[in-house]
Each structure stands twice: as C-alpha cells, then as structure tokens.
Length: 405
Image (cartoon, rainbow, N blue to C red; front, side, top):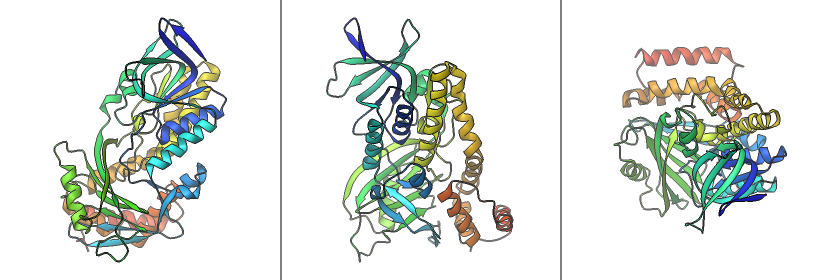
C-alpha cells in the first residue's frame, strides 16, 4: 500500500476523499463498494452548523437506521414579521432530525465497513508526481510536525463550502455565493415550561431582525435543540440575532451546549471537476438548496452521482466522464433549485415580502404540495388545479393585489 519518496511515506489508493461529512462518507462508501481502494481523510472534531433535518426519502434511499433519528417532526410553525404564526401540519409523513456528530460518524463507519481506509488530518495541497498521479499532502492529527502524502488516480473534494480542494484545482470554485450560518445547540426546555417550543415542531422565523435575507430556526433534536440563523450580509451580527431569537421563544435561560458557524453555499458550481482527476461533492459543489438551506439530502445524492462518474472515469481512463456527475444532478434537481432561488430572491428581501410569504403558507394546497415535494424530493405534478391556484395566489401577492392576512 505504501512506498517511500525521500523521507516522506506515500500511501497509494485509487481514490482519496477529502472531507468526512455526509457527502464525503457517502462517496467513499460507494467507491469502496465498487471495488476501489479508498482513503477517507477527515478533520476530526468538526461539526457543521446544521438544523439536522432529513426527509423520509433519504432515510429510505440510504438505509438510515431509525435509532439515528433523534426526533420526528410532525409540523412546522412559520413566524411572520408581525408575529403572526402559521401552523403547517405534515400529512402522512414526518421530517427526521439527526445530530450531525453522531450521524456523520455513523456514515464514516459505514464507509470503513465497506472497505475505505479512514485517516484523520488536515488537507494541505494537491500536486502531481512524474507519472501524473495526484499527490494529496496532509498533516496527520497527533503528529502536527509531520506532513504525509497520499497518491491517487482520483481525488474527491467533499471539504465543505469554499472547498480548499476546489479552490486549488477548479476555476470558479472560490466564487460560489454563500450564506454564513450560525447556531447554538441548547438543552431542550423541560415539559410544561413557558417557552414557545414543542418537541415535534420546527419553528421558522421570517423576520428582518433575525435575518435580513434568510431566516431563523428552532429545530428540536430530542434532548437538545438547534437555534440559528444565517445571512449573506457580512456585517450582520448573527450571534446577537440568535440571542434575540432565543429571547422571543423564551429560551434565553436554557443551557448552551456548543456554538458553531460556517458558510453555506446557495448555488451549484458551474463546474465540479478539473477535467482530469479532481471532482467535488456536497457543499464543495454548492449543492445546498436556496431558500430552505437544505443540504444533507442533496450532499448525499450528489456524492452517489460523483462516485458513479468517478468509477466510470477510473474504469475507462476517460476523465470526461467526471462531468457526468453535475449533468445528472442538475437534470434531477436543477429545476427545484431554480424555483427555490426565485423564491428566495422575491420573498426574503424585505419584511413586507416576508409577511406575504408567510400568509401564502396558510393555503392548504401550498402546505400539502410543499410537504410532498420535501418528503419525496420531486415536484408534485399530480394536481394541476392546485398548482394553478397557487400560481395565481403567488402572482396576486407579488403584484400587491391582496393584503397579507
């Protein structure tokens, strides 16, 4: 498995996956199951700020055991700038909640069970040797003064938004627009408390003082909860905004367990690969849904497509096969991303628009189609009359023909 170059040992693999989140772990598992030697390089101790929501389709498609779900959400509550609250019950389904620390580690262990070699350390750079193979340089955890090398025919960058792998190898990877997210994991309030909180309900705050261009959230995680917000406005104070959100919900006094922040991309990159031997997946490829910020499902789906494209490239020697991953993803999900991008542009730009958006969410057809699309990850086309009704209601609100109710 290894050879020596001067004094630096070089371990050889077919594939090196950089980043051990849902995208990286899924890509590593898929490529290992396809028969490739795979190294999964992860920076230990990093937990991404994330509400932790996953749809039933992810649970089914990726064989997630039920005990990884720390909560099953039965409804959402949308909170308008005027403090009006719109309940959105889920019919015939649920939203699953996971703790990212446990969920991500389970995925990494599953990749290892499939044959991937787990390595812990910090990615530094990529170069190529005389034979053209990629050399991934990293600093191993516990041996901070020593740098090590991994040799690979293919490198998968799954190292998050503003990916270091992407910025070193793929033009435009440093220009993806991002929202910076911040959340606090807190102890859930005791039953019977005066907090505006329910253990099976997600609360979403569309208020300018919580976020000028995104939203705030309170997501139950069983014994804990995620309270957070995000904004693309670099000067906006996210921590004070979360303090205001906690105060509004009566959660100021509950114990804070940890605080986390990170950029979240809101637009897929125009190119995921370097045309040779590097390809991106998950947040590194920009596959977080606009408007909602949902990323876990899309990260894992993109990783499967990246693994398939990577396997094809390794099997044939044709690097052009790598481009198939982005094409497949955009064919399947590009329209949803486009629609959500329009929604965010129109509805999140002012409190007047946010008030109208929450008002639209009162419509039972809107609620039903929203949840069906979320749970199944497909645009619902079975009821054209409902879609037509929603279209004209949206249009009326955009043209100010009706007032928010």
